[in-house]
Image (cartoon, rainbow over all chains, first blue to last red; front, top):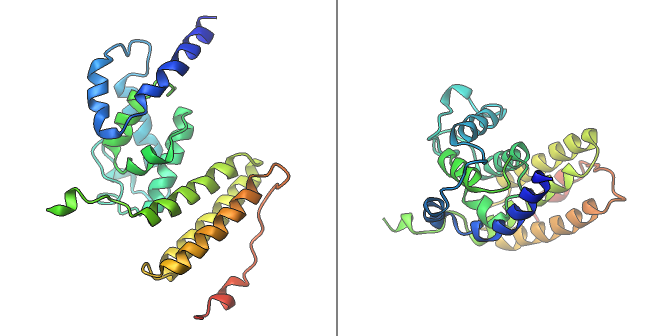
Length: 119
Length: 96
């Protein structure tokens, strides 16, 4: 019951959150009520886990600050695959416009942490 | 310097990546075995083209994107259960 209520509310808040990434930082400071939401540490751990399990990635190079292409030697097609894998891990659907911008761990963590539907 | 403000991806790159994403999404709707097969074929195809096709050959890339979109539409149909690839491509591509 509470769950159903929660998701129906979350459905409505979803729209304002899907702004451009540069503005996400601002959005985040405004909505400090992340109480029942995934905490940052968990998001970071799970994001790193997904990236480490990517076949072309050397797991020892993966840190929360890595850039997919500059640090991990991946190309844009690999980035797409990683973002898709993250979508599945957190049960999200990331629109193309946002997905194109996610090219590093920090951006991925930021986006997922701020996404009300991530679970 | 100006590079910082320059968009990271060109419009055409975005189209290609969106198409790739579309294929991976469509693959999710199929059975697990088909899904991994589709993913393998699709990723192989995109990678091969990314190496073989000159990045300035816009006309040809546009053609490939259009063709890909049609193939994606077919793949999306629930009646389509999987993908089969034929290796006739190699001979067709021999520089026109």
